[in-house]
Length: 346
Image (cartoon, rainbow, N blue to C red; front, side, top):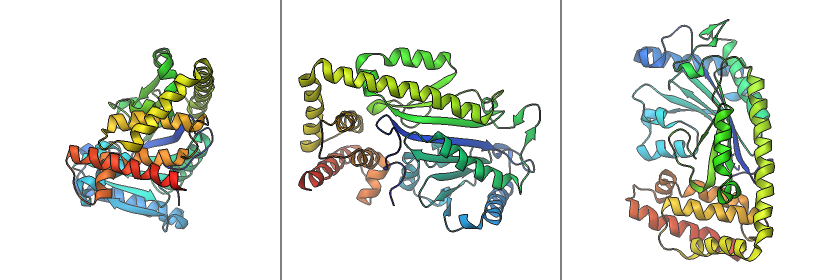
């Protein structure tokens, strides 16, 4: 079964993934940072009981992962797959995640809030991600009273999440906007519209590989559907602009443009050492080359898989042992060489 982070979806030449996340707190318990270990364990039990009694079909699909039982590498793998936040992985509380077999659902328990109900889809599928998230939320709320005030909405640990407590985001691959310099205007426009633009792993991370995460900042005073529609609409404009610029770059100087793509291909095919930053930069070029028909022996799914597998946690899990940074750089190059070599021989 292909996972969402490897698979392709609608408009996935530009939109790598769609994510919807709902923050919820139980009325019966203090917020996580003020709660006792017993409270935290009760939140875990209540969540599982509510979900599985309301939706028995989920019992065979969702696995309860106790974060404190994992090794540092296992925690990092979950962060790199966007299944848990860095905050949950590093927390000293009784933290868990309910993760579906296809890894499209991840319900983080006892992070900043009691629940972070998160659904992820490949490509531009915000409506589908929202519907899935909303159905899980409804199942839990049928059994458990949330911390909620009519005039305000859902109460959360951080004031910026109060209201609908929804975060809607899309991961965008924007090499043409970056190459042409229009990315600055894009970032400024998003700020004026009340949107946040972050890197590959969210807040305080760099946009390596021309990957940008676009999400709403305002959760108060707008309905959940309005927020989803807003990100959908802005995302569509970005998709159209990126596609136009890609074609303009190709038409303007075809040889120079193709040379850039093929140089990156050659570096990845033959390098013996690759830092994560360089590998993501080169894979961004390869992904662009595939989408424009320049590279034909690799697929977008191949690149998506490589982008995940060259991350530090996944690379060390692949090796079966902790690795020093220089050892990771060597194994990263070897993994990419072998992956490209496999496709060339098909």
